[in-house]
Amino acid sequence: MVEILETIRASISSGLKGEVRIPGDKSISHRALILGSLTIGETTVDGLLDSEDVLSTANAICALGAKVDIKRPGICTIKGVGVGGFKEPDNIIDCGNSGTSARLLLGAVSSNPIKVTFTGDGSLRKRPMDRVVVPLTKFGATFSCNFGNKLPINVVGSDQSIPIRYELPVPSAQVKSAILLAGLNARGRTTVVEREDTRDHTEKMLKAFGANVIIDKKEQFSEISVDGFPRLKPVRINVPGDISSASFPIAAACMVPGSEISIRHVGINPLRDGFIDTLVEMGAKIKVMNRQHNAGELIADIKVTYSPHLKGLEVPAGRAARMIDEYPILSMVAATANGPTIMKGIRELRYKESDRIESIEKGLQDSGIDVTASEDTLIVNGSGQKSIKGGCQINAYNDHRIAMSFTCLGLASEKAIQINGANSIHTSFPNFVDLMHSIGACITISKNKA
Ligand code: S3P
View 1: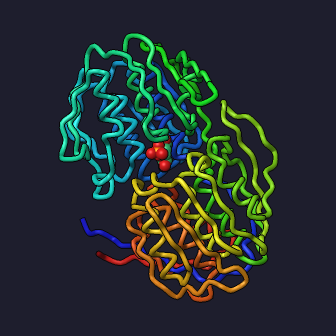
View 2: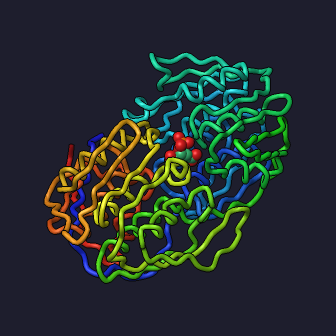
């Protein structure tokens, strides 16, 4: 197969305008597929994200015995096999670029008595898996893998899984979810202890499917428990727009003079909305309107107006879990703000699709911005009234959020920014370029053979 390399060129734009809808939430889409596969009966998902990462999960659950039928774009049904009903797949399961697929599925299969091999692309094979392998081993599953617990990993699931109690050493919704999914096929109550709250889509959705989930919030930590062997019943899941994807047009509208955009039907789960709070503290003109509950998730419409007087600030470490995927795009906004923005407690960014602290640091330096990084902190000294130079080429390091972030910066830079290796955008937001065109962004995309 000939590999095609996509290159984006983002140039100064004037007045982004319009009303858009963002594709479905990636985290919720993965969970809807996995929980649908553990249900007896037919689950319907409305608004499923149609992206490469979600397709990796869909292919995986099919290999494990479920049936996924995409009726029309965004609407799909899943015929599940029930808790404990996964069959041994005929082939290796390839999770592509998707850490969520790999970690959640490792959890889901590890309490089933089957052998499965998981792998992924070059980026995913470098990411740490010991964070799930360690707790899942306690259920009785065995894992064999290369040095450092990285993919490819062979799992032999346990047929007599023992429920566990596990305190997360790093705040991670993926690890929490892997453990809760494994706990579904363990005899008794599995408990995850979190010192910092992380996105709770798995807990919410497990409840919607009929599992007994108990959440006990103490002063210093929370305990999230699930009882094993539930009979999950099919439900209809409505997937809201992904706030992490929405962060790109939101940031672009803040940075591009004359902009005014509205984004409809975005998920604003309180454990995901740290980016909005941070922008508002920086002085961004953002209105969150029409809040309503939809199947346990909070959704709203967001209006954003060009915000010329943004000021840098300190983003506390305690906020990191609520906006972990938004630091790349926040760094772009910080580059246009007055004064330094200090982002603390963000070491986890080093283990994402790329080492995001390094990717942001290099890209911003190339764009003419003063930036310093340490192991877990990033300081961006905003250019304030001076414009961003741009006129550079950025390596996206096969990381969708780095590619989209620098595209947005290019819209507010003096000279165009070229983003090499923008293919990764297909993993989470395939219509990103079209959507940005629809609000007036000056972006061109070229495709060349590798
Ligand atoms: C996700 C959790 C986060 C996030 C990722 C999606 C999820 O990862 O960065 O994009 O769907 O649970 P961690 O759990 O590793 O923080």
